[in-house]
Length: 367
Ligand code: OSB
Ligand code: MG
Image (cartoon, rainbow, N blue to C red; front, side):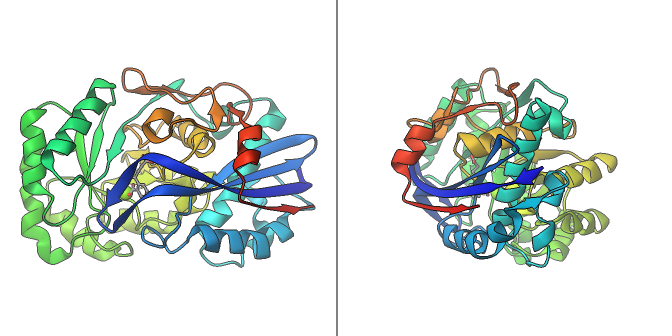
């Protein structure tokens, strides 16, 4: 595949509601979209970096910088031997997985279109629809939390993830468990605890959570292993897993029993699939996380989640959970806890290019 041209754009998209996690919150997303062109085909992707470095060190601006100054000038104009070879000229760049992933993922869309198959099929997906859940931010009161959770249960989500932090944890979750005894709940701490909080975290074992995501430091596999050894509840790692090597180490020392795979966080769909394969061989489940993507990033996530080892519901919610209006059609919907995997070529959704162009706040082209 020849990458002849690249167009990078930034558009603002406002979430329907303010979203708060243990490290802070936001409502306005700065969405970076990439279009690659070559061999008469297009490939689209979304860079999932956020505007501030609270979840990851990358930001919208570092991703823009690394993409425009280092990555795109080197990959455009080159013949690549498939999507996993596109980044070969920039392997020397350390980190910046979200910036790299954007290029690799647009390459996968292009490669799938070249074969005339869906991205799901190109990746080895095995399912026509995938189980999906929803991630609920911290709320000022239990009443507000209960109301939103009740709404999502009515919408049919297969699992509800609740953001927690010290002071908003055991009692808050016990209240939810009391009200919804049979619901599949999990918690996500986004690194808000330390190992000394172990006795507090052990109180979660009584609540029947499917897992607790990223309780400790964003970088620490050893302390998670020490915690997992003392906790009945499965630990799921998010921030701590940024490569297949991280996943290998986490498995070796038993830092977790589940991994939340976000293709942006690990550098693309190729690495995502390798982590999936590794976990599957170990008999452990994975699921696809989310970064409040627009329909373009969501389409990639749904395709990834159709691989056989993604047995747990992903943070892949309906377009209308996030946006008044998405930038793809049809919009993504949830019914009976499942989301349909697009079957058209590539990411399989139509991109609203007119609206994207109207919203564009900056643009860079190569080739
Ligand atoms: O920790 O999984 C997380 C969103 C932004 C950054 C980090 C996280 C999240 C979510 C939302 O939980 C998932 C989604 O609905 O896209
Ligand atoms: Mg998380």
